[in-house]
Picture (spheres, rainbow, N blue to C red):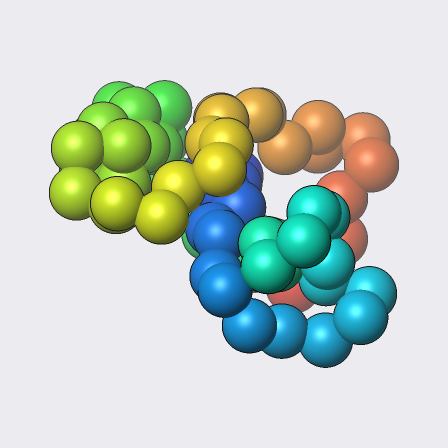
Length: 69
């Protein structure tokens, strides 16, 4: 299992989202079952999002994860 995470920028938001004047950040997390699927989703995000602040992929450590999947 892998998590694809990314942060988007917006001109509006709440005070805790404010990163700079008129820049507000929102975090997003998506779970993928394989590294290949995570890489494909990451590439889709990076290639299509115009308001992207950052993005990445990380494996989910089986020792420190719940069994909700």
